[in-house]
Amino acid sequence: MEQQEYIMRINMLGQEAEKFESQMQMIDQQMSELDSVKESLSEIKKGVKNTEILANLGKGIFVKSELKDEKLYVNVGKEIMVRKTPEETIKVIEDQLRKLANHKDKITEGIEEIQENMQLLLREMSEKAAKENRQKKQECECGKEHEHHGKDGEECDCGDDCECEKD
Image 1 (cartoon, helix red, strand yellow):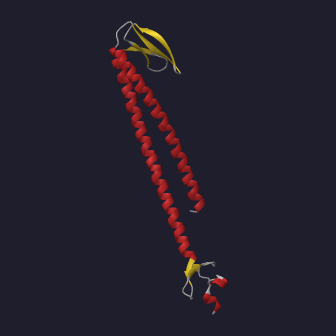
Image 2: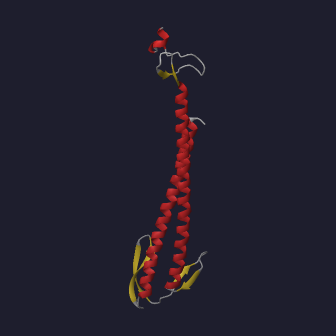
Image 3: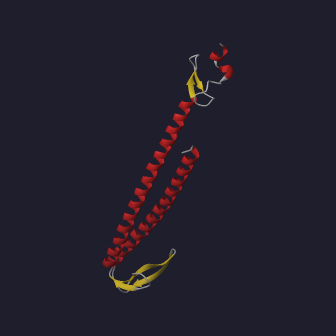
């Protein structure tokens, strides 16, 4: 494999790792939001009816409201709403957090695999370059080691720098 191919593969792996990192950031954000909701639910669970709360309308917009009922309306998908207690809702959130944590673990494994592949490619590239460099050098009759500018098997053509050519 040529050096350009190694570099191209390493760059592709780097881009793949960046995608994983981006996914990891989104998961961290979702987990943080779920943790906040879980904390709020714990407060509602402790709360007393007819207590004033700030209800989040979304996008950082809140409205003062009065807690009339402990039961919540939870969207379970396809715009279907189910009434749940704060405890039941916390269990749903904890399940979502577990799933996100598992997904995060898989992404971490993917990133580690990419890093191993990148290290392997870098090692291969380095070993190949070192081997090519050793093949280019030869020892002349003068006893000095220098670049061999000819092809394998040809005599040294290093010119004026080589003392053995002058003899």
